[in-house]
Structures are given as C-alpha cells and as structure tokens.
Image 1: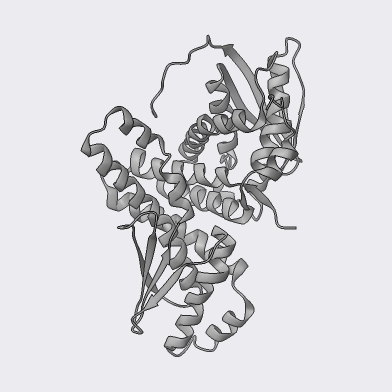
Image 2: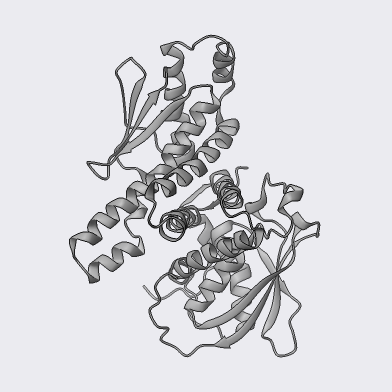
Length: 186
Length: 185
C-alpha cells in the first residue's frame, strides 16, 4: 500500500488504544502529590516533572512518527502546528493552537484551552511556584530533541495560577545535526 | 461522554514514575522506592473508588462501619474489583478468583495489561546488547517494582470501602499476574 501521508489527529486518536482519562489524571495528580511530600522544594518538583516529561517525550516521538505518517516538517512553523494539531490530539484528545510567532519563526506559543491533566485539580496555597503541568513542557522538549531540535519550553500562562488558558512558549535554540548520539537516561 | 486519552500516555507515565523512584531517587533503597510507588497507587485507588464504586456497595459497607463486616461483604467488594473496577481500568475482568474463606483472596489476571507493555522498557533493550544474567534479574526487579502500583490501587479501593488489607503480586507464571489480598482481621 502506498504511504498515506500525514493523518489528522482525530483519525489517529479514534484508531489507537485509549483509556479512561480519570486514571491518567488521578495518577498524575498522585505523582505530583507524592513528589511534593518527598522533595519539599517546589523548584525541585518542577524539575523532576520536567525530567519525567522529557523521558516520556523521547519515547512518545516514535509512536507519533509511526502513527501520524508525518515525515519531515519544512520549518519550525510546521513543526509547531504538528505538535498542536496532531500531537496533542492523538495523545490527549485535545487540540491546541499556535500563535505569537516572532519575526524569524523560531519562537511561538502553544495554547491549550482544554487540559485533561488538570481535571479535578485545585492547588493549595502552599504550592505556589509549582508548575503543575510541567510534564507537558518536558514532553515537547524531549520529543523535539529526538528529531534534532533543541528547544526551550516555558509556561507563560497557567489556569491553575489564575490565567485564562494554558500557554507554553516554545523557543527553538538550535537545529542539531542529524544522527543524534545514543543517550542514556541522566 | 467519558473523556479518554491514549493508552501510551498512561503507560509511559507509569514507567517514568517507577524509573524516577526506583532509579533516580532510591536506587539503593528498593524498599523505600516500593513504598512510595505503592503510596501513589493507593492514592489513585482511593480516588478512583470514589468515582466508580456503585451505590449498593456503599450502602452495604456503611451498615458495618461500627461492626466487623462479614465475609460475604468482603466478597462483594472483591467481586466489584474483579468485574466493574477491572473492566473500567483494564478493559477486561479478572479471570479467576480464589479464596480460603478466611480473609485471603487471589485475583488472577491471565494477561495483565500493564505487564504486556512493561516488557518493551528501554532497560530490556539494553539487555539485548548485553545478554548477561544480571540484566535479567534487573528486569525482573523492575517489573516487581512496577507492580507495587496496581497493588496500591487495590489496597486504596478496599480501604476506601473500610476494608484494611495487604496486597501483593505474584508473577511466577508471566504474563499471568496474581494479586493476593489479605484482609486484616
């Protein structure tokens, strides 16, 4: 059969194995909670969530490439659109939008209106400084690194911190040459 | 409509959670890692049971908050885990339930979903490069670490129903996995 080319996020999401999102949301919540107990420093929790996301991202990129039929994006703009329209949809079942491009097309915002990670979540005052969804920024960073793009991903808006949406700023730092060396966990 | 996410999201998250606790935080203290992973499972079980437990069970157990529940009540709760709860979380029921009628229940899942994925962990990829025995025992250790999570979930559900218990897993005949529940007298 001829290659079918990129598939829509909806089509992929409806064809893959899915589970009840409550298990996912509650498990993530329980992990964050346990980390807050074990690590005390909120900064350190942010770091561990990001690291966890990074490790998840370097695994999920394979599934993304295999199931989406996406081959190579012409530029970072297309990459960002793929993450927002196909990536978020096929894994979390939600769509994100891309905006706020800078002049040279290396920095943009990915905005999530709907975020399954935070269903039933309320943060107590003691968690100030926590980036609850930090796993997501790690996932994007890890996944992009596997396709030779070094990025910096930061939260610029967060509903749990009182903003009106979830917004991630994704900044392309450099395009690494092909053949990324095998990297063990670190 | 029930919200869903890709199963790989849950799988990878669990693997990374286990890797974080047993690999990064407590690499030399497996008992501590196990306790934390179990605690995360317990929390999830506790919260999931508040969403999934049917009303009849809540009524059955609220009658016995002061007295000791009878065996038949324990059995109802265990059956709920075997059927409704397992279907909700793993899309299949427990295949076999045994009990000694004295507070020990063995729930056998002939193809435990989370174990079918755990075998494609990168730590097993490393073994193909280095097929020595320590790798194998390390993989077995990783699997048993991973199982503290579902054990914790089961304990969390039962404890929310007022049944204190200890839960362990037996994987001597993979991919079959048996969960042994010992209700505390």
